[in-house]
Amino acid sequence: MAEIFPGTCVAPSGEFIYGIHKSKFTAINLRESDYIVTLGHGFDQEIIDNADNFPENDVYIDSSNWVFEIPNAFPFLGATYVIKSGADQTAGGCNPFHTLLKRQYEVGYDQDLQAQPRAVLLTLASASADPDLLVRLAEISGRFALDEKTGAPIGLIYEKTEKGEFRPVVLDRDLFQVVSNNPFLPNQYKRHMVLVPGAQGKSHIVGEHSDGDTHIWEYLRENSYIPWGHYAANMADDAVRYTVQSLTASDIIGLRHLYYQRIYVQLAVELGLVVPVKRRSLAPGELEELRLTVLHEINTRNKSGVVLPFTGITWGQNFGFDLSPSGYRLGGSHQQIHQQFGLVPSQMPAFKEGKNEASAYTINTYAQTDMVGQFARDYRERTQQDFFDTYLKAIRNNKRMDGRADKEKELIFYQDGNVIAFVPKAQRSQGEVQLMTKVKCGNIVETDTETRNSLDHAMLLTMKVLENLGVEMFTALEISKRLENRDSDQRLLYCFFPRHPRSPGGFSEFQQRWISNHYPEDFAKVCRDEVYKIMENDT
Image 1 (spheres, rainbow, N blue to C red):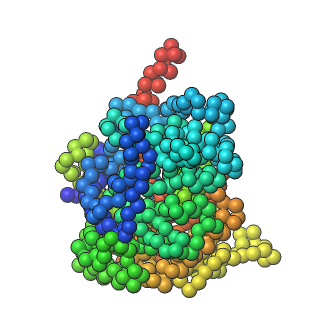
Image 2: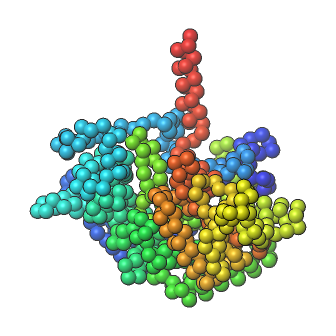
Image 3: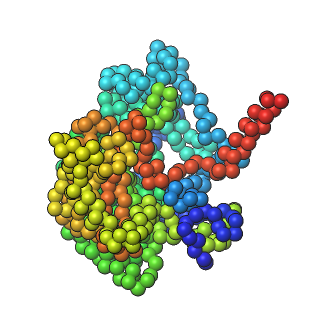
């Protein structure tokens, strides 16, 4: 199969091509304990629990839920991802701007509060610090199962879907999300609404980190907007962290340990190497030993020209949540501190216009780091200098653009022997800061224990700096080089983007990974229908 270069959806034949990810993979179960609890009950009092979230063995995914990856016509503008199951539901015509019925409150549930304009309810849910008021808002946003004696929430009420599956009864989705993400809502309500395993779906928990007051679950998201699935390390419901100031050094070490561990373990599985443990986390020494084994195997295969099954690593974090009174979501999906990560395959089969069984081409997958790697090569060819060495030199030698000698000239705000935290000269968001390794490593497979420790410490410090300055929402992402990229100059880089009112954006958008819940042709039909209506009215 011929490879299309440079990764555009426009084939030389004048046809559109696209990739399809048909995921098949094994997620090693490294979770040590189970936490099976009651989530609530149905209208017929049938008990609903979260047993599905706690698989006993490894999880094998053979997904029929394809993900289409469509390279942008212009490669530097990224790629778009369409999840087949969602798009199929709107096939034939869709309007992504259509607003569903927003108010479905039931008579008898706090009618005085329900009588308020919806914008007022959303504002109160976001801005109020009154726990009693927030409880009232929570109880009109969804149906709670209550203890008959105390009236305290013991779960949610569940209803059956047309497919026979249970889902919580949510009367106002936006209000439910906003109030559950308010730190001042009592934890017993937050727990049942969003925090307890199973509250947000049946995603398998395949990892865990527990150390004193630190407790973190690692969820497998199967085939998602990151094809081949991704993992989410979420602080558990018994370790509630809604602010960075509440995050401890132990917490960040645990969150990052789950990231390092999953990437090393998943790479070992894909490379056919032995994973030393199951149903428990790797100890620090075991983690480093596995990393070295994986790195050696990758280097060996690179030297022999063998194509690696996965070459990209993606990591990101959305912190903070908010919704405008008009209903526009302003932050991530979940304020409880969490991180997301996964692997990106090197290539994907490409198809032509609906012929999805027989691949016509092989094309490279999209990863933002590819543009960085290509630029570094171009820079070296044109200047005979390594870019990242030169970049570090420029950061250290920085001078003010206004030429003033009586003002600060430093861009660096923290550094140790391994990493440097600084304000980039050209900020993409008002308040953007970056964290980069000084030592020569371009991804976490190349980072030793000391460097990882430096990254963890500097990351927590950077997050606390931003929050102390008044940042309530930010997006962070990692830019790391492909595993087959043998450029020793490229450094591992983290970008932190405060969600400034004049500089919006998110984890995926800043990576130029664009997620769509419909097929473009279906939206085109809706637009075309509107054109017909406008033309009819004009005549």
